[in-house]
Image (cartoon, rainbow, N blue to C red; front, side, top):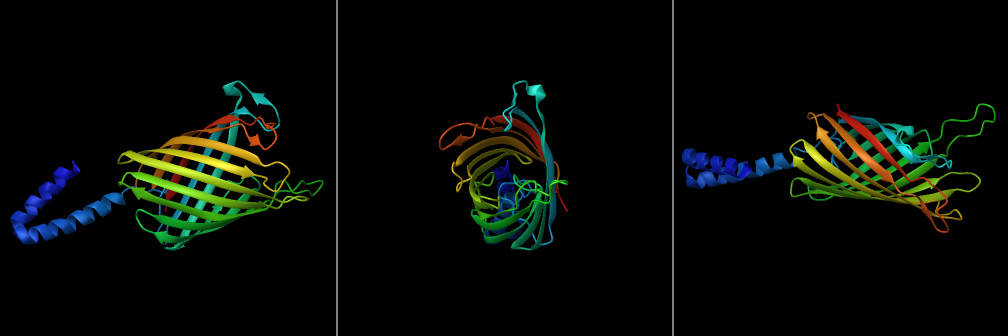
Length: 272
């Protein structure tokens, strides 16, 4: 359909402007058209999204969890699951290359603040550097013991767009957790792929591999797969229903954490 449209514009341009000038104008029009089409998928939830200066966005959602818990209780009945997470992410790009963020999605603390710097912003290849600080605000009212741990993470993300409709990303993050009396490190590896099979609908796949508590006696190997659909309801609003499976955690010596479970959830995003 796009090819027929371009050929039609080529014929009309040549008729009105002559063959030589028509070819020049047609080439200019084609470049602009392709550029416009390539940027059509620019929603907040896109894998290779690049925010612009002054852009503010929010994403939020909830997930239903079933399976087994870390406290060794098992939920074999799917309906015995529970709402596991209510996350909120806020991003504000105050310069084209800098974004600040606030998020409640942190495994060790109540919330986190962060900053992202965009080093390379080509269509096919983009590189971001980022850092976050997670703050464990909550304390036990009687004992004054902190619930959770302050933590700091940093890393980079490489991503891009190929063949207009396919997006990809690879991210590596290091995380240091301040856990007295023994601090520890985590490393997170994430691979994402996304394909638009309709102008407003895309399929997204994600694989996450974590090396947790590296400096502790036993390193835990944590793996998750994620599949979902992203629907861009408008230029500023998107919804992302998904299903996620968290494998049973493997450790260096044993598999004592029965935490394999499913999550079914939805994420919403709005740009301002």
